Image (cartoon, rainbow, N blue to C red; front, side, top):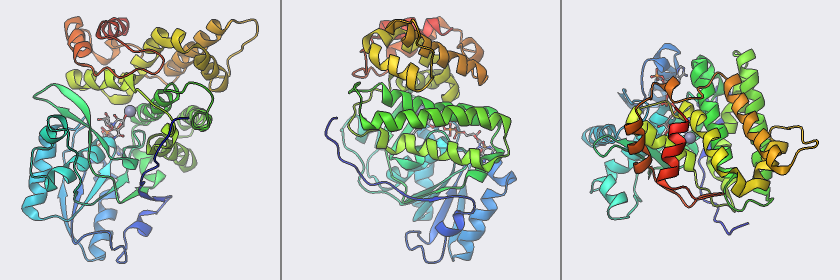
Length: 386
Ligand code: NZQ
Ligand code: ZN
């Protein structure tokens, strides 16, 4: 295991009706002029918006609202949000939604306090924000685990880059699994696949040898897989939603990464694909993962063997290590098909090879878990995804 520092994590209110424990007159963390930030109509239709607003008003808060935070949130939206906060002198933000709303609010919170342009600060000056408008996250669609960390994935449309930034950490998080019951099944599954992807990207990080983080990770992966199967059969079950919601948070709170270096190379590729095509995050990952793994498994053979055995329970009899590793990747592919997730970029309406070259060329290359990629290899992989 590598050395690590275990940082601060948000307070979590988990369970049906947990919002009532989080928003009370006594919760001194919450300011007086409060913004509810969200995306579209879903939280109005299912009444989550009204519940949050009423609880805040009955706690004596002045409530503002701001909607339209799109999937793959843009840097422009961050700037608009920060300007609104400054104008109205908002002192607390509630991000109510999925990963996109939460990420956008993390950066709004930072930009509202920063004197400089936050993109320039982070990417040109190499300075990270230290002051924030405090915020909380109320998760209505699980999968990204964005509520548990201070990383935010933002699309800079001008620069054609979708990339990770550092913003605010939620003061507290509300995870009421029943809120996710109205999420369309396609999004439930793509969100849950994102969770599985976070686990896999961490698992194949270094060290590859046995360690406690990876053993916990295997349990989470098995749990995500079985509950993805279950949620399709029992979409009304709050129990199953509870499992998927907490899996999602655990996968990104940082615990699985303790003692490990991860590369998240599949995510880096998907993010640039998102910058060029605005594709759904979990769906893009479903297409990319198996193709990347067929390129790297030989360099992490024993870890792929372990993945096949512990996560997919593949039949190992009379098989070489290479055959077992490949059977594990095939099991992942079969699962993606079983979940009705896309297996090709064509299914995501992405067919332009020249554009894929630009995606590959602009993808951030990380140190590599089993193997370091080159831009040429990423381009090859993207063509294989067509
Ligand atoms: O527009 P509305 O009506 O709000 O619909 C939303 C949206 O379409 C819908 N939804 C949310 N709650 C609902 C609901 N529909 C019905 N009932 C409810 N209760 O679900 C959709 C959610 O969209 P979005 O937030 O974009 O999805 P997701 O949560 O998958 O977030 C994706 C974003 O997170 C980033 C991704 O890159 C992408 O930009 N990520 C953030 C990470 C982080 N900060 O740690 C890690 C991830 O790897 C990821 O990169
Ligand atoms: Zn992800």
